[in-house]
Image (cartoon, rainbow, N blue to C red; front, top):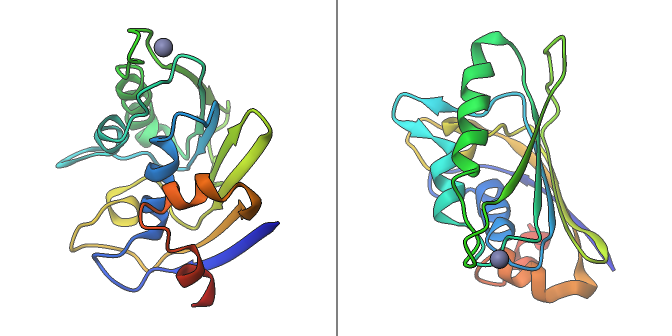
Length: 175
Ligand SMILES: [Zn+2]
């Protein structure tokens, strides 16, 4: 059964957007992942790619990661750096993670979409307001009130429980 939750971030420490995305990224079973954002922050003290590197799946040689951006030329370098960071990830067999980079010609990409698919198709989706930035994706004192829609296939509950790390899907839905 398909489920949906709309999450408003209300604190520095709890970030469902981050938790769900990194939880999904960590799972071996997701062979196709889309990460689309207007902004991928790779500057100052914050490099979003490090969060993904720290939460890489052990087995990723069958995975394709599709990235789409970016809002403007100022953020193009960050997007390039984010993709380069993800390309450092290696499967336990030594094969580098396949990361596809798509940039639209005229910029102004503003859609925030994350989709994780296994061999049966999409199982988990997130549609933001959140970008992959420190204020939206991080756990810092400077954070935004972001609203994100999370959709998942509850019949494939194993994936979801792993994605939330603590299996708090019911808790999340009831809020
Ligand atoms: Zn491998």
